[in-house]
Amino acid sequence: MQYDTMFRLLDGFHAARLLVVGDVMLDRFVYGVVERISPEAPIPVIAVERSVDMPGGAANVARNIAAMGARAVLLGVTGNDPWANDLRAELELSTNIEARLIADASRPTTLKTRYIANGQQVLRADREDRAPIGGDIERRFLSEFHAALVDVHVVVLSDYAKGTLTDSVTGAVISAARRAGKIVIVDPKGKSFSKYQGATVITPNRLELQTACGHECLTDEQIVDGALRSLQQNICDVVVVTRGKDGMSVVRGDGSATHMHTVARQVFDVSGAGDTVVATMALGMAAGGEIVEAATLANIAAGIVVGKPGTAVVTTGEIIASLTPIDGRADHGNIFALESVLQLARIWRDQGLKIAFANGCFDLLHPGHISLLDQARRSADRLIVGLNADLSIRRIKGPNRPVQSEVARATVLCSLKSVDAVVIFTEDTPIKLIESLQPDVLVKGADYTLDNVVGGDLVIRRGGKVVLVDLVPGHSTTDTVKRVATPHSS
Image (tube, rainbow, N blue to C red; front, top):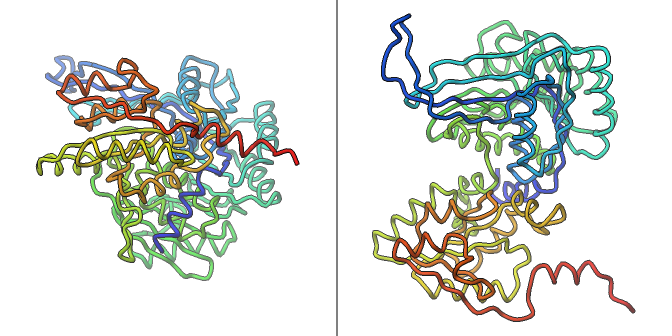
């Protein structure tokens, strides 16, 4: 796949709106240490230190979509209990997720609690009810689905066999979506894929395909044969099989297949990796990519997410940082993920070079931005720019910003001679980035004062300095957007 094609698709993510339906759950990670074996039974005793909650299942698919700058409508069923409240609270942290969760007092919210001690998962405890939804809950669910379907580009079904996507619900959802001309992508579960009849793409893992087709699926040939059984039954148009360490395979109805090697650098935790795959693939297709292009991006994203602890997400910035130009150009070669830019900063310091850091949205690049970055570069030997992700800009500036996606903004910054590296961050402020990078010089505009520069105290404490540079009068992105939006009188 061409390098420029991948960037075009990533640039289109921010304009996508996806509808995710399926089994929502709360993933709880309990961390501690094991220093002894219980005297009551031959089991480890965990001294609990902390716990972390994350949206799981279909909610994690929506969370991945939001982390990549797109908007997700999430439709699912919870209980009427404290775990539902905890899940809602986690989802409310993202302004890109519109959660439409239906409370069913007859069932608990699905809760998966994983106990991690000394870096290893030692136990998982599940609280759930797999009974199929029905009656009023099913009617409300389908009503919400039809209302949400109008304004989305792609529908994702995330089936964890927890009772939400019954045969009747699944059939109604897929039929309505296809009649409306929507792409339907299914992350399936179960011994048969027949209930997904009419889907555009299904994305089983190797074991799920093996169970559905009834034979071993290890080699490329076995994978293709197993996928063709579903394709010949007209269950879907394409089957994309995730194969763990062996990568992914895209199989079409005519028997042609594309096999992709895994790009995982380090496997830390596979929790939720399938959610990342289906989210990225859906975004790739929503952005106009064909299935192999979308699957290639999903394969890259999967390789990134398994290197993170817990039910994690991937950002477009991290995907960009994983790409290498295949035609010898380096147009985007200085966009980095945090891990890579930290390594680069260490190399520069070993060479005795001083590092400056500046940050901002840089939505519509204007002379004021150019001047700030030029002055920042002159204050040190190298300049790293922290760029607000689309997600954080929407939280700060509202739903109509940014005007340009993070991919477009990062690409423009990379073209400037003054900028040596760009790193995209999803938080509202760059404080974590500054703590990690430990720049020698922190640069902001003169409209700030020393005492209100985020991270300024950290830099000064470590022997660095904060530089407030002169601004070019009459230039601001907000004013530019207003001028464009205001019609001129004739």
